[in-house]
Length: 211
Image (cartoon, rainbow, N blue to C red; front, side, top):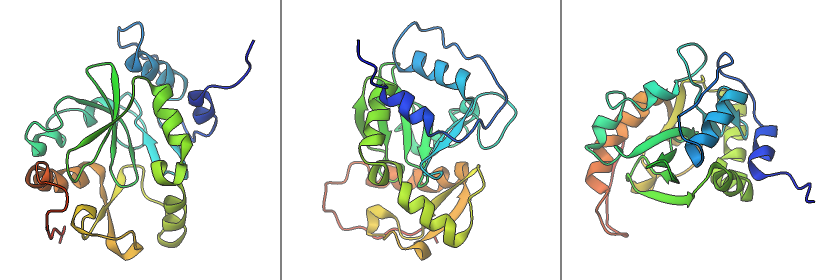
């Protein structure tokens, strides 16, 4: 009998939380990523990973940071993407506002807020956890989050970073290229840009800035 710990259990062992009061979550689905998410939030109601490089949203009205249901309300930020984010049920985000979401209750994806393009990560939160743990720096912004907050101070749980010059427009990871915004505002800033670049071919020349 194998005693090897699952990737999701390993990830939860590194969680810093909870961000909200204890809660029991049941999405009414017996299996799949939504069922996993219900179990995760029932165990730790919202948390940070990788030096706050990744945030998993809490559920319920009380707590720190944005809550799961409000975040997924169309009027929060999805309306600025003009349908490009409607199929997403976002459960987490990284320090740059990249969304981790469940699509149609069966697939976990990474959603780029600047392009509205998604990347399939697997069919379970276990797959998502394994992907994060495979390279916490590239996939979870671990080293960047630590270094940035050591120099510029910790972000509020409701804040994420927006590049002054967007990554899609050639922006760098230099600390001076970032501004902290409320996470909802951060997404609303990028929605109209994502509409413009979503269908552009790779290599297209663009110059985009937030200010």
